[in-house]
Amino acid sequence: MPVRKGAPALLSAGTLCAALLLTACASPAPPAPAPTSAPTSGDSRPAPGPQAAAANDLASAPVPAPRIPGVGPAIQAHVPDGTTQAFVVTGATADSNTATATLYRRDPARGWTEAAGPWPARNALRGWTADHTAGDLRSPIGVFRLGDAGGRLPDPGARLPYDQDEQFDISGTGFMGEPLEGSFDHVIAIDYNRVPGRTPLDQERPLGDEKGGGVWIHVDHGGPTQACVALEREALRELLRALDPAAEPVVVMGPASELAR
Image 1 (spheres, rainbow, N blue to C red):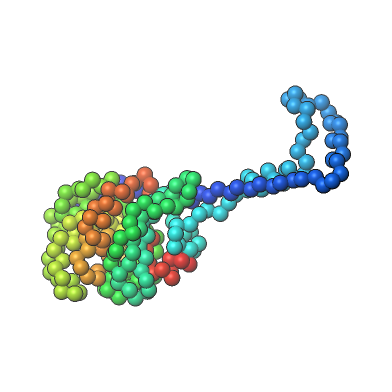
Image 2: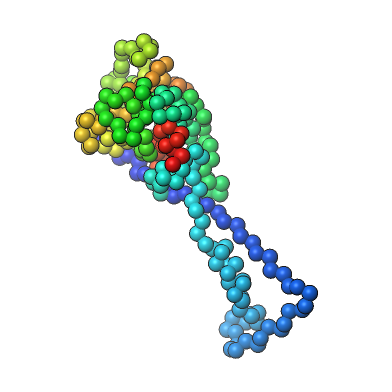
């Protein structure tokens, strides 16, 4: 399997607009004191007074970074500083296996705005967990990088490195008796317990096999997953074409109550 360089990991920026209106009362303002030394720039205007200096300080003060819609400060803190694309997968409850997925991008002027979706999505049979283990049938909660893709079918125009391989073939049936065939026609590896920069098929598990792995975004087969996130085929193809390694994309995934922390 080819070994490729993956995407690294978002500076969020905000804009503060402050305006102070300083007005005099009924009496005229006293004359300004004469400068104690000659100006060097040729500008004879007096230096700003304390109120003007305070206004300047307020205008240049740092502002809080804007957050991704539906994402609270605790989760937002895990979004890397360089990331400008975030794929947010939100479950209704901790035990739900259906979700809503939306791709956001950070605009320098407007902050985080919707770029694609929302799409219906599926997650693991038993819902979500902040401490995923192999076989628990729950999807991991958190913020994870997206840097590698692949599938049984040819690259649909992905900007991420894409590994086409027949080993993405799958058969059998899912939890609802639905056929699994075609589920891995296109996949995006979620960087949970894997080595970034490798094909999604890579089996190395840095946290150990007991913590699970092989958590992907793949084609929806019509039922809950083992731990992955599933999207309808055309939505996944659209996502593959949209994700840009230069934007250091991440997936932010979990139940709404956890993402809002």
